[in-house]
Image 1 (cartoon, one colour):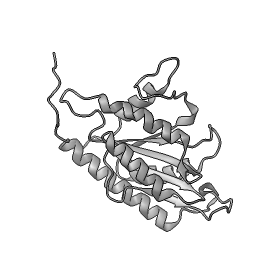
Image 2: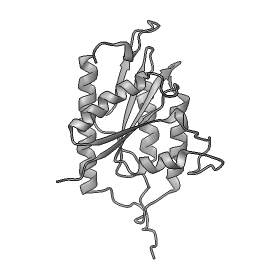
Image 3: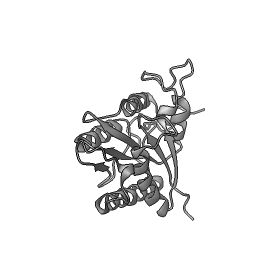
Image 4: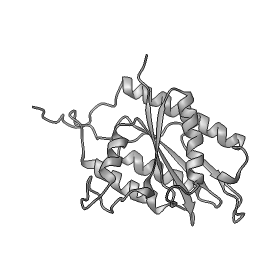
Length: 210
């Protein structure tokens, strides 16, 4: 039997645990769809950890990014989930993007970027405009560092502007959101398995090994 694909949710809500999180709820719909397709999914709320500013793998002085990065590197699919604030992704999501930038200078034994063969699903939630803009930012930034965005890989929910209704207030997941989550999960898990069987080739000289 093929080894399960591992997926990691980085929930970039601004709310520390255990506060209810619409970002967590929408990412959870994607997680359910991934599990239905044989994936193992874990979730981490980034704001609960001390993530220092910087573009190095380890900024020292209690920086907890290295342990999060380890879980990213152990996963084939990353669900980067963020709320929308003033039309933008959260500052927590931006910190994650900035810390992943360090991987541009990291390669494996074959000279390939460290994040090759990994998939990203951007997930955006909010009751204001900006979701398509944020999906585009996440897709571009993480593609730059080595991730692949699957077909129809972006998932979002936009509530009525200034209504005060959040995703966690809904009685059921809207059909269009559920269908989008299913498509993203199906395409991401399919692509992850393809890349496991046939990884991207190295585009630089292989690193020397002992």
